[in-house]
Image (cartoon, rainbow, N blue to C red; front, side, top):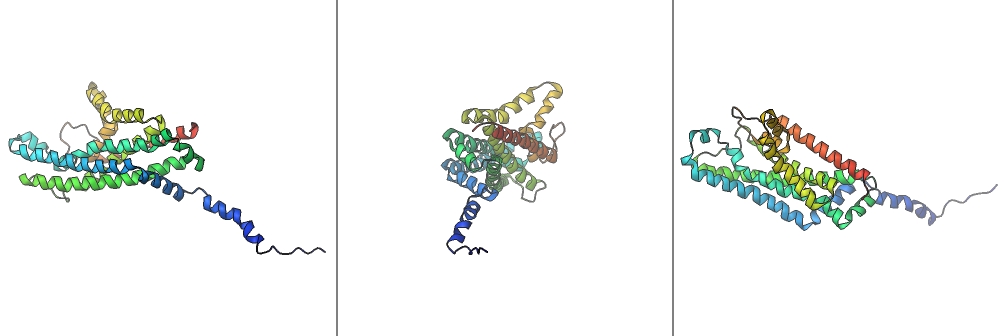
Length: 284
């Protein structure tokens, strides 16, 4: 009978080495998220773009509030009746969405232009975790920045409006919903920028497409005759308008806040879904 000696102490660690190496190098969602966070925060353009979004949100909002105060004594009865103090102070968020949207485009097109996308997809062969992790990290970051910006714009704007006693407090009915809604609208435009960038893979074309969707399409839909103008409610601009409107006047063709949220979610689902499909089907 042949006796087999037990493995020596030197052999045991060697047999476990491949398993240990595989555990350290295995692709996991937390690791992909950490990788995308590193990419986002290592870009100099990220800091400047987010800072620009905050400055634009607060600066333009305060400027509009100062202009309102300066001309309030000359305002007519209809202007005073339709005045919405919360929305007035958040006017800057409508422009800050440009910065966030462009940043969303650059997050993916920058990788295509430098060839970094091949490294990313080589490290994560299944591909989809790269896109969804990038979207998740960008969504959390942009929403946090946008919400801080609109909150600051609200408080400074209302302080300015108080010079004419037309400002409101944070407890004003619908104020919190508008603040959260405005930040979500900015986030949604950023994610649409990411989706368009993934689809087109070029920075210039993606930014032009995004700006056309945000600014040109609403103008065109508003100019359509008859019932065709109702299409505006279902484009991102119309859905965002529903999120930040508190008082609806007779004749306003605006969705309810919940319906506006659903429309934006549908746009994001379609955009990111199309981006995911093309990322999987197309060569890097």
